[in-house]
Every structure is written in C-alpha cells, then in structure tokens.
Length: 420
Image 1 (cartoon, one colour):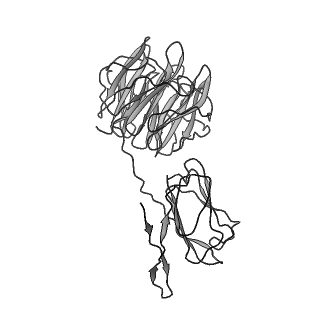
Image 2 (cartoon, one colour):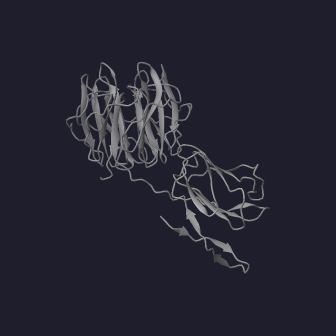
Image 3 (spheres, one colour):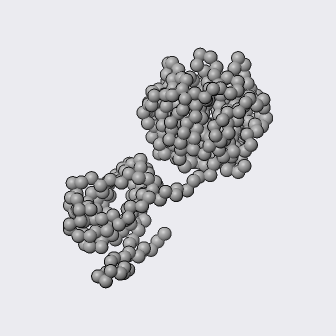
C-alpha cells in the first residue's frame, strides 16, 4: 500500500483535528537487529531471525508520531526493545527497559512533553491470525519387505488406503516425511542396505512422487520429520553410523537447507508431528536405550532442549497431527511390540499412555488426513503387515483395518492436497 495515513492531534478546543503531514509508511521491512526511526513514519519490524532494538529520535515535539508493527508475528519469539534515546518513556527515563514480546502486536507512539515523553497511544494485538487450510489426503511410501521398496499408497480424505502405485525414486527404508508448502509433501534421507542417503523426493498436490533430488545435509536414516510454521518442514536426529541431533530445515519450495547443529540428546528411531499453531514436537526414540524425551520446535524452526518424557520409553514408533492443533504418538518397540498411544495437547504436553487398540507392532508410519484426523499404517509384528488404524478428531484410535498394499516396515507418510 502506498500513500499516507492521516494523523490527528488534539486541538485546544478538545476536538480532534487532522494534521497536514500524516504518517508515511517506510516500504523497506526492517530485519536488522538495530534500527533508528524517525517521527512521522510507520515501520514494519520483522524479527523472524533476530530480536530488534529500535532507537527513537533524540529530540521530539508534542504530537510527533511513530508506529511499529510486528510484520511476521514473531515478536513473541524474538522481541522488540525500544531505546528512547535520552527522552522519557511514559514518564520514566531511558534507563528503563521497554520491551514488546507479543506476536502480532503494533505500537502507536505519540510524544507528549519532556515530563512524560513518548506515550503508547495504542499497543494492540491482532489476535485473529489467518488459519492455513489443512491437508485432506495422505500417502505412505518407501519401506522394506526384506526387499527395498519405493511403492506408494494414497489415502483419501475418508481414510481409505489405495492399492500399491508404482514407485518413483530410489527404493529405501527408514526414511522420513512431512508436509510442506501447505499442500505438498517431501520424503527424504533413508538407507538402501549399503549406505546412508540424503536424497529427497517431492510430492505435488496430486500425490505424484517426483524423482530423486540430490541431498543436502548429512546422509542418515531413522530420523523424523514434521511440518512447522505456516508451510515449512523440519528433519532432525537420526543415525549417521552414530546417533545425531542434527537438523535440516525445508522451505516452502521443498528445498532442504544445510545442517544445523542439533539441540537435545542425539537419538534415532524417534517420531515427530505438528501441533498447536505452527509448532512441532520430536519425541521418544533410542539414545543407546529406549527414550521418552521430547523436544519442542517453535514456529521458526528452533528446537528446544530436552524435556523429560511421559509415557513408555520406546523406539520405531510413529506420530501425526490430529484434531486441528494436537498430535498423537503411537505403537513402537520396548523390547517387545506395543500399541500404546500418547496424545499431545495444543501446548505440547504429552499425556500418559493410552491402552493399545489394534495390533501391537513396530516400524509403523503415520500421517494426518481429512483435515483433522490421523492414520497409522503398515509396520512389522513377527511379519510385515499392511494393517491400518484410523484416529478420529478426538484422538481415539480405531480397531485394525485389513491392509491394502504391500505389507512393509520402515516406510514414511505425510499429508498433501487441500482438496478432499
């Protein structure tokens, strides 16, 4: 938007009169860690990558106006600090700390006089954040029957799994997958019985799996992946020959970034899922022994330190989003196969075990489908199975559904398509 927004001051008569100058919006979005602002301007402050200190003018007159706005709804992650540059702020000297830490906030500053200085006329929060559409379909792909597979099985918006479709890309197992770009999916990394891999395969919003894309980041297998932010994905942890906590972020075009040094205990054979608004959680796995640790991921892909786990420690399980803003972890191996599940609420708290429904098994995969539901599928008991279990939007796991497609283990699954 170009042009100016009319600014007003209080006249001596007590009526509000329009000023001649108005407020000019600076077109360049501020992404730096520091910026000096000028009266009469509005500024978009983007703290996606770092916090920002805003230095106000060293001199001001009554009625001077500055507006700052949270451009990317990230002030709750990386805050904005105001330096009043020798002038008072709400009657306090500039030795006081003025910090804004609420995502979606805007601050309208008016200078009063030398006594009170700058006063926030408004510090509103836009609570009605647009909600991204949800994926309606899913797919399971790759895995092993004893022989490596690249077949896929599409899942419609009612949770019905289709028969095998001829695969594309290098056959492999212990791969990870997540949704990205809103309505697409990506499968990446894995093992081909001779070496660790870092290749990826993109899935379009029609469920077509693309050919191999040369990998970025350390080749590994038995990692996990989840969506985060509005339309991004994260791959993390796994086995490179030794357990690791490396992470790789994936942008909304399906491009995987270089390794980022990991946070949290290195482990393998864990699971991950989206929860809340733009958040993700990695949990369980194997550190050399069974684990129930969890690590939360914020909406800019930062992995938090370990949180002591809840529920049965286990590995080779799966996880998926359900209910719009929650997640479920289920199945796995504790020394024997299990079918227990653990629900995750919309603030990332993992609940205690829920008794198993369906056949206990390990090396399963899971994805969301139908907007607010989930499905666990495939895996291994004492043999390979194609069994599935649907999860309703309250997190209740349904009984076994006879499998369609090739029974296998070590596959992965992800949601795709906004169209039912």
